Length: 284
Ligand code: GLV
Ligand code: GLV
Image 1 (cartoon, helix red, strand yellow):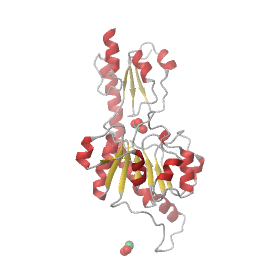
Image 2: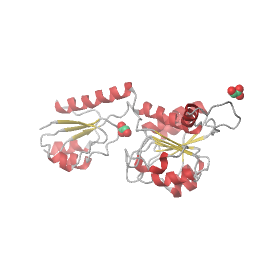
Image 3: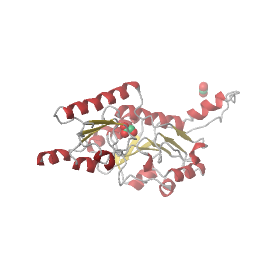
Image 4: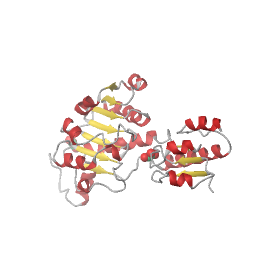
């Protein structure tokens, strides 16, 4: 009997669910990603689909940097080392990492989050290159980010950060072939979607030293994490915390509620993901 639905990222809103809600007029996802929802079907049924973009951009970009720095400087490994009582004195070759300052940052998916990650690279005097479905001229002007083709992105990135959404082009885009084209000292960071990387192949690449390290917030079969990654020291693995700050999660909840209220009071919600629904509405 619900008129509005507030959903989380892993609530599957498929045809069966939509068909069982005859009165439904809005599905408000409390996330920026919306791949848990059958959008074409919702549109056909004249149901608004909304998300919570914008407010989580900077928070997720911060987390991408937390991963860049903790992988490159072995922060998690160092913490474990110390707590295990192994810190018996300063040693010149203890837990050596790789420099971040002055390196090349590669962004796969230059949208809002990719741009926010790139902006932070200025303080590290990094050169920013990116690959995206479309060129983003604004970011080229603002950050002097350079658009490159996919093979160049793989070849030249010291830190390759994935901020793309899941779509036909990004799904399974990174596998062993791609890792082999990267630098042996490269670090890959994924704050986009898990299915963009073939996790088993990544575990192999990390184990064999084909690339240097990885930082992950999202997983291919979330919440299941590839067994092979779990015992690798050169991977930092966190449980999908991209937008997880008190401030941002509160804002996301507010926006999700606001979208429902707007829709149920006869207005167009602010964060409409399926504007085509407006055309469908007119026909009725
Ligand atoms: C998080 O992954 C989101 O899509 O908000
Ligand atoms: C490190 O603490 C240094 O002084 O080099």
